[in-house]
Length: 247
Image 1 (tube, rainbow, N blue to C red):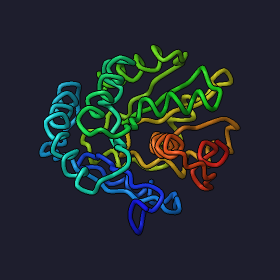
Image 2: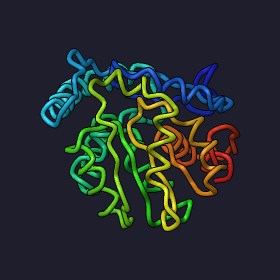
Image 3: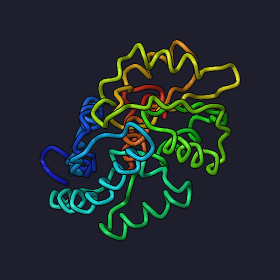
Image 4: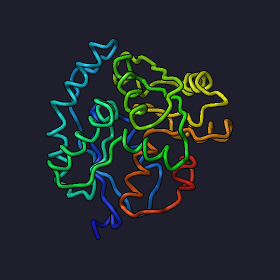
């Protein structure tokens, strides 16, 4: 037994202090016997209204991540899950691998990142040609596109919502997300992928899968799926799309 509320697993989840969505999405999946302990990366200046602002936000994440990891380790988790995504795409496939190695060396724990989870999910779903959207600025979208291309996917298009602050990511309404997906979808696109963990998209993604007849991958679903399956937990879970329901 890991603990009373997480007898199957306790996942340490590292999130920016501005993020209000990740923990909600994980708990809403209602995985029996799995618990989450969040460590928060302090973001004193959440402005990300242009490329320079986005780079400044990343510097805050990099400055705060060690403290957040330190804090989450006090709960003795079984796995570290990164509840933030931009940094996990930075530097392409090699950058993601180096990021995961640093965290593993720091903690001794297996690590789940957004970039690697999306790659694994798309392979599991049999998708090659994808369209992607994010809440980011162009500098980050280029890194997202680089990762997916290096990972072997054909990236048909990337749309960035250009959210002005980190908190505004969680304020994007469903109707805007629907419009973005409609603009990205095409007959030759195998899947639509959403990145940016503070974007509330899990429930809408499931509805869009039914409407479009193809995978719509929300990054919070992908990271939870990756963490569970890598930990040997194979429960099929309703309410969060075909990835957690069927794979």
